[in-house]
Image (tube, rainbow, N blue to C red):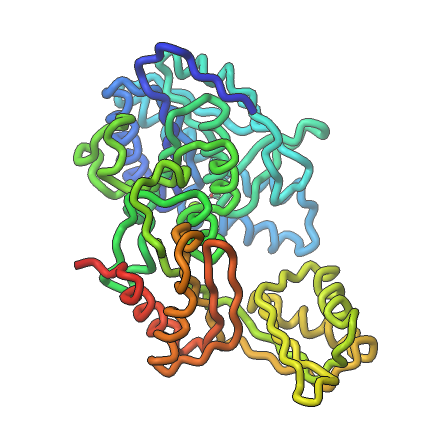
Length: 430
Ligand code: ASP
Ligand code: MG
């Protein structure tokens, strides 16, 4: 991919991405067209990336499964890529009917080149020059998200569920856009889930790294891969709501960024950093405890290698050595949906590992506090553990990174824990 920005360009190049709920029917597509028109009228050059109508991709996937559970991944892609083709064409039609010059483009036409991993392909390259020439000529380019072209076999490939965010960032990089605006059904990224904490606040800015943690912890606002790509290519991403009236929003201006939505950007561009920026929670965790494993070199490998070979991701790990020092209990977490497979894999190697028993529970939740400020502030974890203990919440496991502390607790306490920590780190709105 190539970034090319022309010196002296007066107008901004804006990529606008609209998710499934924003294009759920023709009336909403008309609303999207009005958001696009606002940008064009202000003199911006616009490329639009669209998802399929809400529910459409699910329906397509269901049809494929009904046709055959053991289907060819290339034909899966041929079917599920069609949702975006519909919305791109419809939006181009509506834009034309409003007097704008617009043209739809599918992944293979750009082309958005991918690798061979059908169903969860990665974008390899997007030659952006031709697309940019269309924008420079005053044309709105409406591009199908989620899909691209695997050039060797000359076949359509899709990027994995939620992949149109990544399409949008990649297109933004390819045309040298000033910003990639992701329009969705929320008006930004919040300090935590507002359904749990009504005092949650919209974050005007958040760093790529914090957003990555939020995304991988279940905040569904942006696909993780799109944030990774934006971070590597330093593409600023804004999260905006398409449900704000198109004329109530100011068009993109490089100097007026912070009034609406959330800007996901480099941490150097964030002047006032909080120690903690957000609290995330994930309820789809499950805990496995392997009881009484011999405590000697090589046991961890014998437990975790078979899991890795089965493609199961292990997250938090705690080891408790028994008082006699001879054996240990090993507790760790996996995705709740992977629990049956994880247990099966471990039972198979029971005699090899030599453990007494396995216990498991899916009634657990992972609560995380996230903030780049943690790098330079001590005591964040200590305050967290103290606050949770004062509420009588027991911590089952802990894991940390440079900018995140996660604790595993019982499911029933998840909301209390989120509320407690949100207040503790001063995130509650006045
Ligand atoms: N339509 C695709 C999906 O539902 C891609 C996307 O919306 O990002 O996963
Ligand atoms: Mg999405």
